[in-house]
Amino acid sequence: MSKILQIVDSKAAVVGEYTLPENCFELERGSQAVHECVVGFLAEQRAGTACTKTRGNVRGGGAKPYAQKGTGRARSGSIRNPIWAGGGTIFGPSPRSYAKKINKKVRKLALKRALSERVEEASVIVLDKIEFADGKTKSAKAFLKNLQIAKNALILVPEYTESIISATGNLDNAVLRSATSVNVYELLRFSKIICTKDSLDILVKRMG
Image (cartoon, rainbow, N blue to C red; front, side):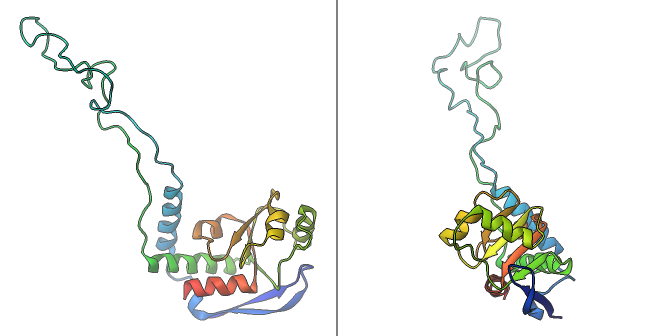
């Protein structure tokens, strides 16, 4: 079924309604898709730069340390043998990507399920517009105070503008994101999602 959301202005007064299409509201399936997308996003954040040297990378060891026979010791061909101190590392980590492949349909389903959950728990605030003409942090703080936002919030805009970036850059209780790039993890992470009608239109298009 479709979901109707109230549209408010910067003073939290209701100025209209937004109907979330039926095909963009999903609560019966998609929990596994959400899990996969969150795990995939967090995996992509890993640097993957851990690196060890194998016996072929460790410096030295070109000459045989001692004769093959007659010493009474176990034979050895290099001081960089992994069982020697200072030798190479066996099966150690090397630079790699931790990114996981997630199908496009799974991503769409996860986005749909995540947004539906936030709408269902009344965590989505739809505004007619988000503007900070002076580009000051003071204006952004007053804006959040009018909406009674005290904890961490996600502000979704159709596109970045210099004034919005300037006004929200130093906020400690809100993060700015573009509706074209926001992901499932971010939709679930923040206590409130503040977006414009145009931002929702972009999300609906991404889920379509």
